Amino acid sequence: MKTPPKKRRNKPSLKKNAILKLLRTQIAGGRYQPGQRIPTRDDLEIEYSAGRVTIQRVMDDLMKEGFVESRGRAGTVVVDHPPHLAHYGLVFPFRPTHVSWTQFFTTLVHQARQVESLGEKRFPVYYEEATLKPSKDGFPQLRSDSESHRLAGLIFAASPHDLRGLGFIEKPPLPCVMIGTPDRHLHIPTIQFDGESFTRMALDHLLSQGRRKIALIGAGNPRDQFASFKRALEDRSMWTRDYWLQTGPIDRPEVTKGIARLLFHANQHERPDGLIIGDDNLVPSVILGLLDAGIRVPEDISVVAHCNFPWSAPSLLPVKHLGYDSRQLLQLLMESIDLQIQGGTPPPVTRLPAVFGDNDVESPGPFSTTDSTDGHG
Image (cartoon, rainbow, N blue to C red; front, side):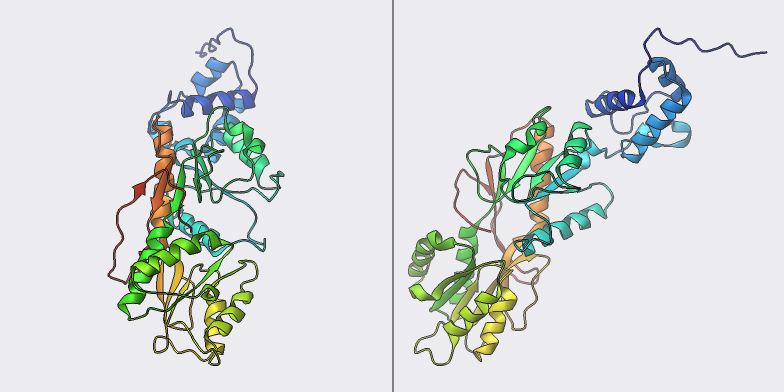
């Protein structure tokens, strides 16, 4: 006996991409929840007046993109951690080959891969480039992923140069969060490194070692922070000289090798007995400068070196590592996006406190939220 033909609804035929887009939207919109079975292929054929091959291709694409999976007799179901809830796009200002790529960016990527190894989250990477021009694996892919609901949100590893090039993230709104100094023009929740806690903990440690004459070698142009650094020294009866407060470019860390050698050379009539290296990109070069100057650590000086844990910069001399935990940072970033997905409003600014190395006994205070723009990372 012949099986009677299936009755199809009187709907115009929809192309494969249109059906795929509609099913993605339904999953992202909550019509089909994680773990819930989606209609069978037979039902989809009838629903969309489409052929078996077309529907199979749609299912293949949904599986490839990570929206659904086959569970045997249970049918095809939405995965437990679909892209629109578990894929956090990492946006970097430039590629790793750029001279200004930092150790912090490398640390953030490493930590994201560690979280990915647990099997629930994904962190696709995009590159902003200095002028926001679309790049081969950057914004064209980002636009496609955003419009196809393949992202829970975006994490900007640094303040974006210009969000006008990313207008598509506003339709529909895509949750975003930024690392760095808050920008009142961007209106993006920001995770900020608590520079005040870094300074406080670094100086307290040096003071505990009996050090009172303190030098600082930092990166970029933090000269506007030198005044607050001097006040923190005065509060502890510690002191410095203006020429002991130096900065060097991240893209030319070898400059700080010469700075360290000059500051601590034996012919200097007055030398610091404590040193803070304010950026992990500079640590190897500064240490080489100390070795060239014949400095012994900790006999001659004590050194606190900035670090992004758990990926500490190597050092040829014993130093006290102090910095920020990338594991805590990534957790805060994901929580900010998750809260936005749920309809909540994250604090405009959340401060990430400094911490000593995993093997050290000092512990930081809890995370704090504030509107302040102080601090550095």
